[in-house]
Length: 480
RNA sequence: GGUGGGGUGGCCGAGUGGUGAGGCAGCGGCCUGCAAAGCCGUUAACGCGGGUUCGAUUCCCGUCCCCACCUCCA
Image (cartoon, rainbow, N blue to C red; front, top):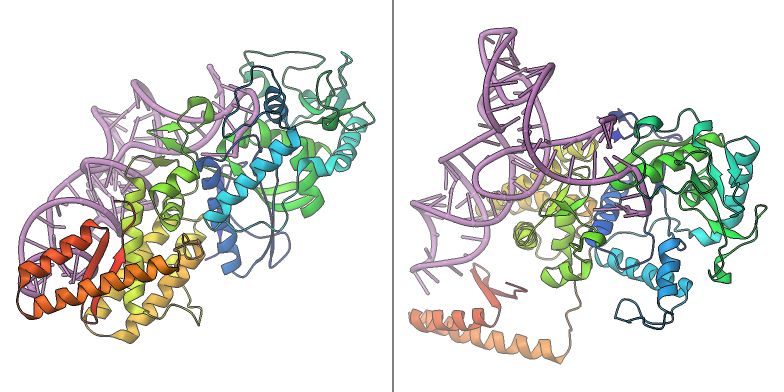
């Protein structure tokens, strides 16, 4: 079975064959760094992280690019607001912050969130502001071929002429004449209200640092152009996969496709879009105020459990978050980890096991992670059964497979929170061990009341114990 | 109004023209001094109304509802 992927443009699942045998070029949209990340951003990154890992596990060499949009209206607005006399600074937005400092600060916040959840860095992570000349080349080409024009109102804007490009709307199968007009449609110097800015003329009051010289006057890039320019620069005029959140299909990806295709580029061969994260059925977004940040999730559960949760639904499905979701993920994950601890007490290092063919088939089927997880859990059950009948060698084989599956899903590489290995921990271990030996004595003397009292005492302190044939194991439980 | 995606057991969430994933939760059993963990068994679903079919949750028609996008958005 070969990998099959759902392509938004054709609205069908197709066999995936890369442009160049053995290699995959992938571009996926990162963040506009104007605020702190929420879990929706991270879900998208996790989805594409899993795709990349699966491509690599399938033998492909993957060249991945994820952009950073470090200039846009909101970044400039927020920076400008921080200089206002009545500005109320808070922990997210300090006073007097230049736009580039604000953008860089949030870029780092995104990195922290990605890192905490085991999302690997892409091969390249270009910033919009670093590719002004590439954008100029693209605009020039579009102007010369009659698909773009400078605004007629003297603003210095340059627009893409959607009516000049017959295929406009092909990605989302929309007809220009059927589209609902934006409520605040401002025709400015546009030929059609749907024309979008490739270049935005510098406006009085905007910082000089946010403007670049161009053949059409000083200004800054429009939103969609950067992705076309950077994808082409790093991956070529035609590349394999372009990804992003479902909400980027229109207008962002539609516009990218139009401008690149109009420039004569083949552009992306597959378009992949991940579903939204919802809270009680509503899309998480800042404007609705129903966002949950990665920090909040990481405070509520272990990073691996958060990663498990974010990756467990099919990438195209909406992911429903509700209170308790993380605890369920934690319980499922602990079941898996407990088996690994039992079967491979010394770790899963060494040979890299193959994954079960059912797992492979599930992943090849448009990354059907829920089905793949079913295989994983069935493997765990088989392994536990093997352990119960004393077949350590079978159990080890199944444990290695389990570890390989966790690796592909990116769960095993999620960094665990730092447990200070300092004196505090040593002291705790000594105290617990001492209590456990008292309990063992009580048990030996058949004084079960005393033994249970010790167990309860430990439990109330968050120390969970388990009697096994190898002796009593203990661990500190986080959360509840 | 246009476009796309959905409505599956208590919850999450795959999938399929017929033997009905998986997880979480529940129940019964084994194990255990009792637990925990594990194993075995088990309860329970396919929005509604028609149609096609030997048989539909799966296909077709209608209908209701939900979500996303059409404005910045992962």
